Image (cartoon, rainbow, N blue to C red; front, top):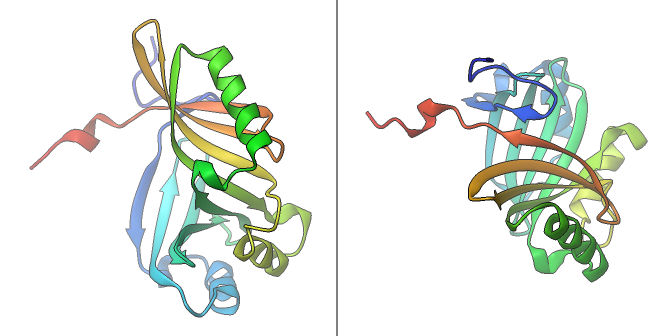
Length: 183
């Protein structure tokens, strides 16, 4: 039997820690200084581990939407995510996602929807420009947090869908039992 802190490709145990900008890799700091929009709110910096990898994130609000800019441990841009609502999705994309979830689960609830823009397709500056204009640009992926209920068991997943709403992958989210302790 595996201990609760074990991870695999289909499990996600995430730990996020608030840090100062100066604790991020130099390359990430330079990218943020050069590419962040001027009129952002609530800029915060994080160090994150999920069992498989280590990363750094800058999170902020821009044009009333939450943005997350993620870097690898060396400071290279990995992706930019923009949190959206169901109503922001194209009807056919939402239909594909909900059809898949309805076939796989007795019940489900979309808790969080993010459009995802990968930096692998272009230079990092263009990735930020695409993300800032997310309403008119098709994302590379949609990343969803989905609560499910099957045969009375509740589970939560991080799921990845392509730009057309076709399922790609999922990882079960395992909450650290310490998240619920109150001191």
